[in-house]
Every structure is written in C-alpha cells, then in structure tokens.
Length: 107
Image (cartoon, rainbow, N blue to C red):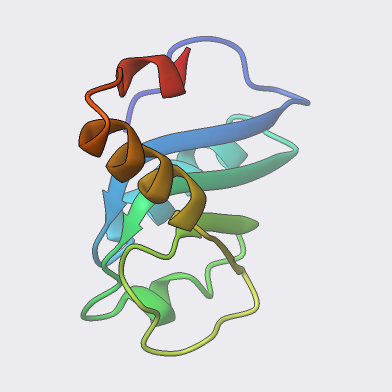
C-alpha cells in the first residue's frame, strides 16, 4: 500500500464501488492509520461481504463501513451502517418511464 499525501491527524474516507471480502479495504485502513490518520471510514455502493468480510471488519484500523442496501446483509455488524437506495432507484425508474433525464438526479 502506498499513501499519496499527508493524512496525519486527519479523518479519512475511502470510497469504492463494492466491498467483497474487505481485505484490501482493511489493509488500506491500516496503512492510513500507520501514517497517522485519526480515523478511517469507508463507503461503497454494494456490500457483497463474502468470505472473511465480517472477520476482516473486526480490524481496529477501520472505524466504520457505510453501504447501500442494494445487496442484503447476511448478518449485522457494529461497524456497518446501511443506507437505503430506494428513493434514488424509484426516482430513476420514474424518470426513465416519463422520458426525463436521469443524469439530473446526480447534479
């Protein structure tokens, strides 16, 4: 793991599209903490969370993982916060059905 930039004394947010086993995520969090990050939080769209994911999330280096509910959790975990994707998905379906811009949802 290579860290570019100064993270000492800072709260860091890692952003990814999905988390599978959380192995790389935890290694990145450990590298950031080693370089002096105060806290490390991660967020991703899809929490696949397979294999040793729940075990890896027990790492002291990762403080929180925020995911959407696009994939149901297999089990709860104290470090996982789940946000609903229902509103944005519903809005996208409505706009597609009515031939409106979906892009404007994200502006």
